Image 1 (cartoon, rainbow, N blue to C red):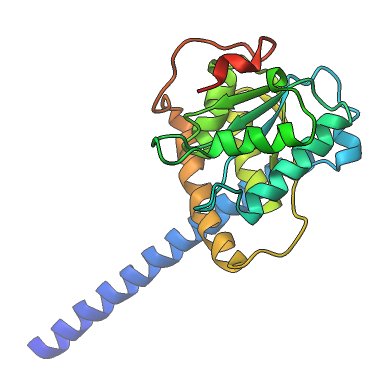
Image 2 (image 1 turned 120 degrees about the vertical axis):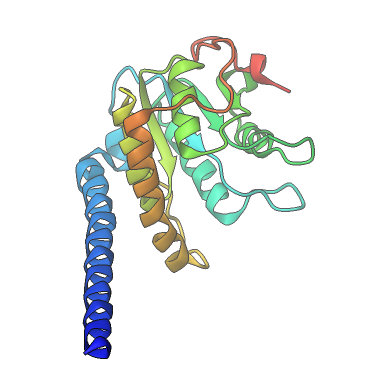
Length: 228
């Protein structure tokens, strides 16, 4: 009798645990689908993005820089797209947002150098040295750089989350993808992005301040004021 009762309790516990796992998985994938679906119409072709009016800047989200100081494949493609859009007249300024949290690692200077090599003047390129995450980059674009209407550049899988954050923060935002090639490890990026969308879904509810804010640097001013 005791053995039968113990087995029954174990089975009940396993069933409850399984049910909780299924509910949790459903919530994770449900939030992921909502983030993607709610922002998909905001992803534009480069041609359509160039027709937008009164865009404050093109926001380029940072990515890895190689040991030799050159951009990773993903970052290079984001920069390539941003230069093309800038040259098409989509926006009057570029905002390079990335990680410069260490003296020995500076994503944003690599990003600015790339744009200048293609003829964009330094004063039209702003650097956000404290864009440590997608959420912080967009929050700072609003509060530090005073942006109200932006075009975000990243790979498509990443744009849905970036646009969702922008919507939650009250910024009018559009995305243009920078997928010029296939990327090694894309399957793992896609999987991690599901979890990241869930994380930022919650973050967008509470809207915590980023690591750093500081004084306002209006995007219509001189980008050289952000040189460091």
